[in-house]
Image 1 (cartoon, rainbow, N blue to C red):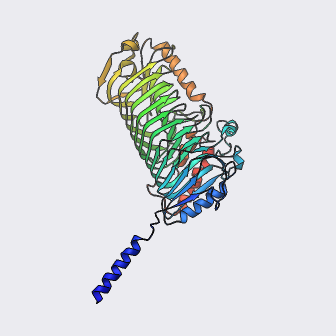
Image 2: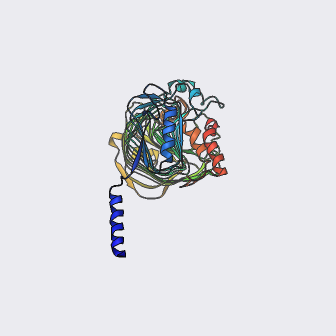
Image 3: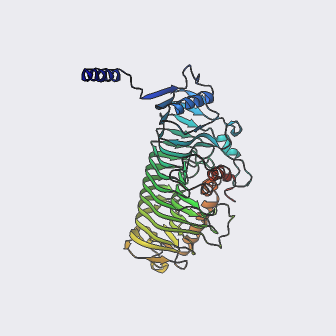
Amino acid sequence: MDQKLMNVLTISFLLVLAFTPVHSSDFFDVTSAKYGGKPNTDITKALLNAWTDACASPWESTIYVPKGTYGLKGAIFVGHCKAPIELQVEGTLQAPEDTGQVTSPDTWVGFRYLNRLTLSGGGTFDGRGALSWKQNDCNTNKNCKSRVVNIRFDFVNDTIIKDITSLDSKNFHFNVFACNNITFQHATITAPGDSVNTDGIHIARSTMVTVANTSIGTGDDCISIGDGTSQLKFTNVTCGPGHGISIGSLGGYRDEQPVTGVIIKNVTFNSTQNGARIKTWPASYGGLVSDIHYEDIIMVNVSNPIIIDQEYCPWNLCNKKIPSKVKISDVSFKNIKGTSTTPLAVNFICSWSVPCENVEISGIDLTYTGHKGFISSQCSNVKLATIANVTKALACGNYSPASNKNHTEAHSPEISRSENQTVSKNQTETVAGNRNEPARVDQRKYRRLLMTSSGPESDDQFLRVTSSAPNSRSTCGWLQPRAVVQLLRGFWLPLHGWL
């Protein structure tokens, strides 16, 4: 009798499970009657209310913004949430033109202390930054006002940003800080070439950040990398207009953490100020840059295709008599082809205090499109581990200037070396053609490029700041007092980062 009863109960329980609906996810439409959002109106309140409900849900949730144009004064989305959330934006969100009307002084849309977030939908975050660019005077005024970043990720893990457009940000488009495992896929970042401080993606104190199949065109660095970053990979990226993909600038603050493990592969630079770049401040604090690899790169009319600059000083407020203390090693530039708009196509200005070591250049095929001299390379204080399939003119001083006299790029034989050869300040330049006059022209034009941009290179106002935050691969727990201080510094100090 007991066995029969058990069988009946078991069957009943299974039947209940079979006919019980499975609650797999929640869906929150900001234009539903509950939230009241409507096109051509401000949906700040509706979006934040939908986020509150989604964050509290134990189920995987989607917050939905349908097609249409919506105003958004600003929103900071804060965890910890109980389950993964996808913010699916199909419409266009527009920021106020006036920075003073944005909810936060430095952030328009922010995500903090979150895991397993997805930002998707094919929509646009329009920062409407034209007015802000005109008012930006940070290159001349040390007390300049803070500018608003389009989208910030702070202490965010395991997150995907896909099929999203960031348009005309007032400042950086995306800022990634103290995060782990962040992926950008099929993102589009757009601002005019003369827009000030509009870095595409800035990354600091973060690990495992991937940018793939993404188009970036801005008035500053397409991607800028601050201290404390590792395991970064950028593939199938187009950059232009802009200032290239830059490591640094570094060395501006005490206790900066190393930058290691960066792969930039299958990238096209189109009409950018720089291509592959590493930069550190002179008279700097110590630091380390290592395991950096630029590979399979196409340069199309780039001003400075390959550059390591350890005397980086955009507003001439530095003491160049004191060398940089940031150590650069294990760097490769491989299979880089295309055109340079200046004769100086390869330029390594390394620190005489801590020379660059184990630098590899191979498969470099660049041509000069202008008429002011010949294609050339200039290098100092660098130990080259490998030189392969590079013309003499781009071989970084491995031949004496005399041996290159009256030698044109069109007839430059390729050289191949694999040895630790240090290029000192006495052996700094390899020029295809007459050495003296083209060299002077190259150097003047190069310096002007650093000093006459449309505004300050914003990465230097921010990159040196984010180094102040705690170094963590998984810092998305509750804020510790030190983290509060560091995070505040990360938001405030960009105003004065160039000092």
